[in-house]
Image 1 (cartoon, rainbow, N blue to C red):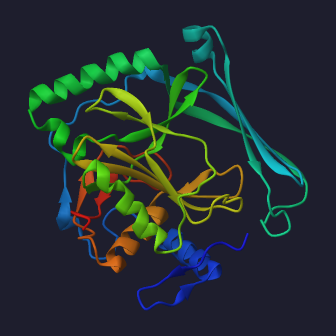
Image 2: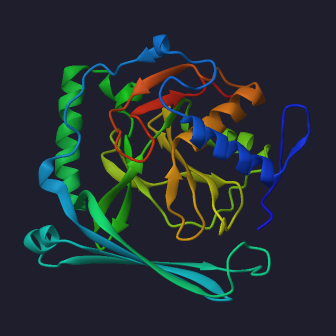
Length: 311
């Protein structure tokens, strides 16, 4: 896949090769808390009140089997999660999802003509039915609101994770790693900035969800953007959720070629911060907030507050 070029501040095109080199450098140096350009540890803002965010009763451990089958017409990814915890709680021992990605240009998408590969690995996550999450998260949000009337208006109390809807339940999949002050109708402006750098909002993807405390419900991403539509050979991918009338919460990652699994959260976070800085319409990095949502690849629990307004 040739990828989509993007413009730098001087109008020059950034090739796919230069972007891949940039990612490799970011991973090599370790884009971690405090290492972003223009930021030092003195700008950290620790969240005010913190309470446990996920009960141990929702923890599920077992194994995951991921089979990727590539043919000339499509790439098909089957994930099977197996756990005795599921058997004890729900009477079933496995969860299965199947994702299919069509190959519209199989001569240039970077994939082999045919291939089948299987990966077996430990599975350690949080999974519960929607009503179980609802009961717990609604109660948690009520406690937070009682601690401070403005608790649900601060970045530290935006959604902290995103989830996958699997067989009638929700599995916690990864962290939010960016946040911005905006209002619902301006979320399109954020996507437009990425589009001006060659990204697209026409993204082949499978929906993910976030718990929106202001509305006490799971909602799938409100907008998405990526470097290219199909991304069969990987790249940056970002999802946006408008939280009430105040904040937009964002998850961004760099993924590999199908099965499109995240390989870094920090490289994507850094790239988006850099884009917003270069675009000149943000105060990036305005601050760093501790979301206490570490434990996923290179994400250390802090999120970048990348802008204060979009004109």
